Length: 250
Length: 381
Image 1 (cartoon, chains in turn purple, yellow):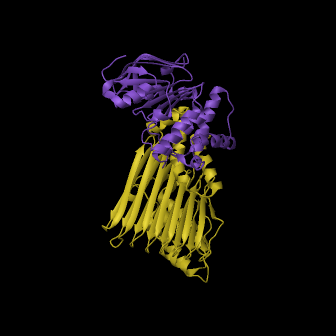
Image 2 (spheres, each protein chain N blue to C red):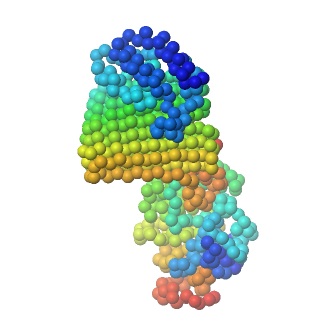
Image 3 (cartoon, helix red, strand yellow):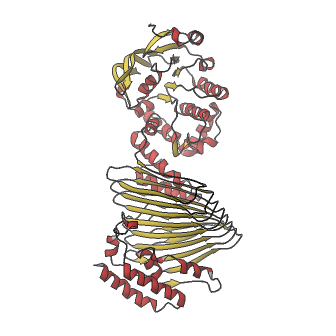
């Protein structure tokens, strides 16, 4: 088991948002977490990534046999957990390539891989950038600064490509994307999908799932998973709306 | 030593040196400036303009003066006029500068684009006072870059003045890098006059010195002029830096941009005082000013005062100042990419400083400053 979330209760500012969430993720799987606004989707992403503002009241998260909740956000990242942000943060004055190389080398230090110097890394990055059709012009620019919404999301997927996580959580990666950007981002994710990693897609809408076919769909309402099924569940949801599952329990 | 005996030391030095000044006009100016200094002495914290910068330890020091030097061209009256108009009465430092000035002139000929940067390497020897006074005339249609570097190796007193005129359609880029030793003292004034459709772009980087202050006095005197006055002060230990700037829009349709950033660690102290004047007839002015400070320690402190004085309604102006710590969301973002917290903090701080350093288009200077910033942060990237 790559990730096991057991009866997770968590929230922010003393307010419980996740109220007993269970989730099992194996390598090679793509899970979609769907739900209306306020259902706790973002809280789940933030808790898995280790955001300091969120607190876990009870429950367990086991990642590769380790207690994920005991790990600092950066340790989780070096150990293969990645979250693509809904609102990627701008980091003025730091170039994309500097930033990515540092992150890559930190991971290599941790996993015993080979660190790359700027020239070597640039070649590596060029290859990876093809996955999201990103122009190398973006390497020199400050991280996300002045990027359009679509460029920021592509940049998130580029980071995923560079860091090759074992578990990638894509938090509302489809929000704010036009149809072309959505296609590029989704195709990027599909290229990165493999038998060695798992992806959790957190999304409000079904449309992303037209491009990235999930193995499992979980519907979140009121801090709990209220319905689970295969990819056809997403279509059913799209048709019937979230009111259909609200109040229901698995 | 009291300031009275100090005057005597400078006075002795001045009387010994002034006899060899053969240029009558300059001699008169020097005498006038020295009398001003003798009457007022160094500024004190009782002067409103020096409220936050205490130079008592400079005033107490014994500073043997260096030789006066005057090299003004015979066939060009402009440098003399500029020298006569130098506001030596700004404070005791400026008066001392003119009294003991080592005067030199740089002329960038009209319609000439100078590819190689013009370098001014200035430093004060250990225990001595240096008083360079540089006059720069960027003639009409010229284009050049000036690199003014301060690199005093020990506890010397640098007291400099740079007067600049940017004539019609000229474009002058000015990098001013102060990287004195941590126990040096540095005062400098930059006076700039920007002519019709001319452009002046200053990037001032302040890293060194125990006590340093830079006064900038920029005037837009003809339509279409453009000024950039940007800077960084990055301080640690007990360093003190003060930037006072004045940008004066005296005519319509000019613009000015100012971004100053401060990174303060340990018990260092920064002062930013930026005035922008928009005079009565300066309609169509576009003036932006901001000062952002990052405090890396609880003991660091900054006093910032951006000031806009507008006497015309048809203008676009903005100003602001911030003092704060690193943004939590930025830090979290970097952590989620696997950067250890110390590295993440250093990288964000570096990025904050880089916004100014990235303006420098000479790769060798930029990369040297990059390393100095990283070194200051104790990190490598």
